[in-house]
Image 1 (cartoon, rainbow, N blue to C red):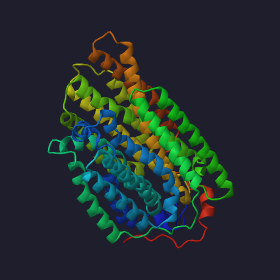
Image 2 (tube, helix red, strand yellow):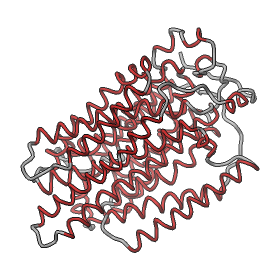
Image 3 (cartoon, rainbow, N blue to C red):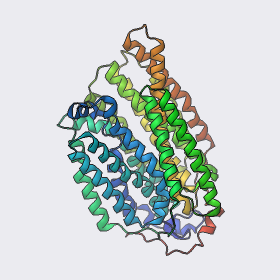
Length: 502
């Protein structure tokens, strides 16, 4: 998925000013709009099953730990598949990547909706996740290719809804749907929407850039799948209260990831790596990666703690919990385009620094949760967190990926997507572990009070860790940096250019 860096639609920051001032960039390219909708639909499914666990236990007569696998397996598959997408997106055309991803997702959704036994439901979720894993890197790579630098903030603001708001809205949507009927409705409602989006995309989508013919290093594929899968699985099991085996699995995952990194560094010198880690040599991208990973980790930790507080401590139903946290997710999505326009006009620092401070402030406020805290205060703190994340994500995505040369866009998107899955698992594991350890220390106390104290400490730990976000925010530049010289050489490679839909 490459394109000449001299093409005005490729967003070359070193190109002539008149290219960036052209009127066409003020409209979001149809290909990006379509991919945003498709990505929102598929990523929504990552968290949509969280409230369905009791229904699954009753329907299939399985334990809670087994039922949790409908979410764990999805996350594991995402972590295992995303590292391969950097190579895959450069190997195939845009239409082929889109058709493959959505076709696989539809197959998994249909299988899950009709599953007569739990094992087939689990297989459906794995197939769903395999399709979902391709969509976010495809969206980000296409956006960075066809949208000029001067307009990326605005367009990236729209993308924020798909990659950040969808997971936040998943539990709220499922809470409402489960009030209407069976858990199968969660898939039956998604199926026709995803089918319509797929049909529309295949009818109108045009190819962006030219695929490259390259061989795949199958040992890298295997090591990446085992390494990132084991790491995420170990962390997720650790979050369930186990210690010995999950730690061993996570350590094995770390060792395999280290082996994967070593192999990619060797392949960079002798051939084509599966995941090009030269993206990490660009300082702005690496700082953005650290900021995004920590922010995502604290967000997922809060997403697991807040429902536990509202349901286990305050006694709210899943539907009431979903409705209470829904305004924050909606605010995050609605602010995305505005944040993008502000970024295009004033740069990133006016957004990222206040956003980082807001993340810390909201988590610090949640350390004060109690048996009597007004729900309005909980709502306000959650909205503050979501708004702060919206102010942070859009500029950081744009600055980070914009610092890479064009031939590294797909690899940078894959690295970002992979670390998001690891950060999600780590954030969940850390929040639940801190809460459980603190509650165990206060064992003689009443169960509710001990659990509440554990949640307060977990929020405090998250607030302390999120200070890293503030530090990284200060270190990031305000504007996208010029494409590195490394990208200039790539522009001379043979290709047929960018084909932009009208």
